[in-house]
Image (cartoon, rainbow, N blue to C red):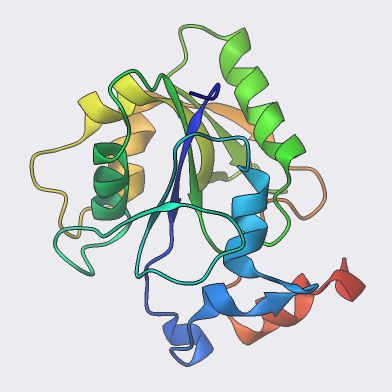
Length: 190
């Protein structure tokens, strides 16, 4: 097993992008999903929660229950796919085009340096925690999961764990939710 596992949330309806499968949109010759998977290529296992798609690397697919139940339901489904001995898990949304292995290394290093911390989460330029770009102690996540995750906000469950803030470098914290985000995500706009 690798030093860490990863759960990538790849569901959602992309309403603000007209309902297209945004994770399959190309950015710099790679899909949004593949770019996110590249950032956690060292993870084992690498679990993706969402409808199966073609990816450049092998992953373990699973789905949230109930379908469309939101990010917390997705996280719960992803955690269920991890072996009990998994100690640290990267939790990412699949629509972050500028994450790199160096981003994940900084998050892992922050968590390693603070053994009492439950997690480390990237912050954007306004110091807002980006709940879907973090590394967490798997046991802390499992213990925080409520019995009913349907339509519960992820932040409401994770915030009490008081993760360490890790400042983003450049556009690491950016995601793709709108056509403007998509235009900004292309490498010529970096």
